[in-house]
Length: 195
Image (tube, rainbow, N blue to C red):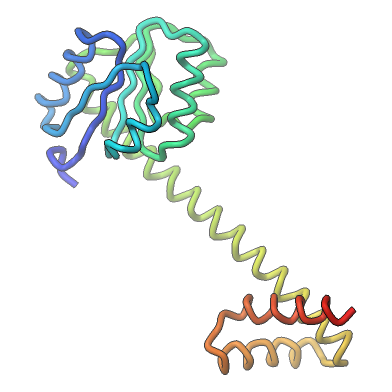
């Protein structure tokens, strides 16, 4: 995706600083830039705008403002670059845990905006891929447990060997054009109701 295709939302309570960020983005080739302040229902406004990238610029963030920004980053799954003038180690950790892709302390200069946005997008993509792979692995493991449990029930209740129990599940899934895990869950439910 080219820079011009990205929609970028700048969140800043200071309109003058927001204008600097906007100018840096436009000069870097990002033409779809929107600005909002930190007050009001930020999550709702962000979701309605559906930006591709979020830049949060906080001069001297207090604990409440940072928590609100971290809340936004947890809910809105987008690359987020956060600029702050002051920070402590705990704030950096919390920002990363909340999903902030780039956390920059005392570094808001117009010429640095493009590389930081690019880095935030890249890091977000890498972490999003890892998160999806983790979620897929968890789902496959959960499915495997259901299938193993159904096999165990068939082996115990019907006196089938493990291979035969699996073959029965598989054959039934193919005949009914359903997923193997769905058939396995049906077997478990049927045996539980039989008890």
